[in-house]
Image 1: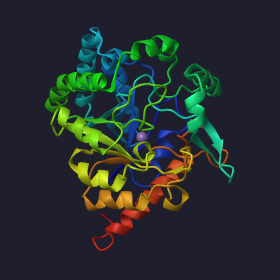
Image 2: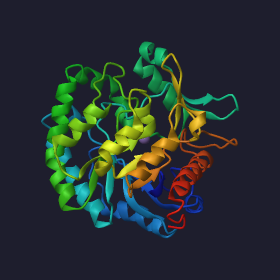
Image 3: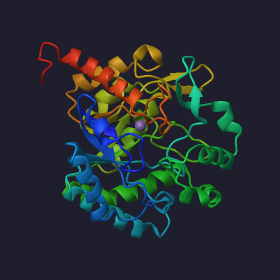
Length: 357
Ligand SMILES: [Mn+2]
């Protein structure tokens, strides 16, 4: 397990590279050019800025999250080809600086959905929260409005320029079924996987978060059967999945250790975090500790260990604790605690093989 930590870049993150370097066992940052719109080619000079900054702290940049997919590709519009060409060029550019894994997603309009960014736990910590009944009744524009007023740091997937065209997008997706979305994903993968393969870059799709349809939009990367289907769309070792325990785990029918075991050869990157799921279907993000949430993090890590996982892992989200002022889900303290929990489990499993490896 190669531990990495998401970093939003200079001036765009409350966490510094020096802080990241000081977290035990973190070897690299998970990064992106967050100021570029989806569909643009990532230019080498901007890529190199991040690479050089990270290298100066001894952190590698082998994992990128995300290279966002332009909506025209997801919608299957004739204009998609220019964006796919840009995507191919971005893959080649990233390969030149040693990127090994690109995480992306194929969720229409929104990358992820919550109803509150700062829901208070009993202990006063704050976390991302999903209230099922609220989602069923709220106008998506209202939610977007609430989120944009909340934070001066733009959140991935909720970039203002994308949200301006929200009404239009919803109208266009009215005609897109799940089968259409599968076809559009296949078209995309058939074009980019050969490029990824030729450049030694694994494309790792992030599952839909949460793993069900929201606001009537189609969602397809939601469960074991659909991940199998995804991997067969283009059956290449470079067509992979980012195993996100918290995204898939919001549906308790998804047995995460079982998914890890089945898809082990096609998981180059793991997101590990816990959530507490209530009887009414609401869920809140918790500390990583197994007993704090509904997911068995010990057994999830054990499944990775049992299958000889040598890919990258990050703690995904954390709560806001100790009065930290940070991006919702992306503070320093709780993610660092999460990393130490994950290492604790991992090293105890290594016991007997020499935990010093
Ligand atoms: Mn995730």
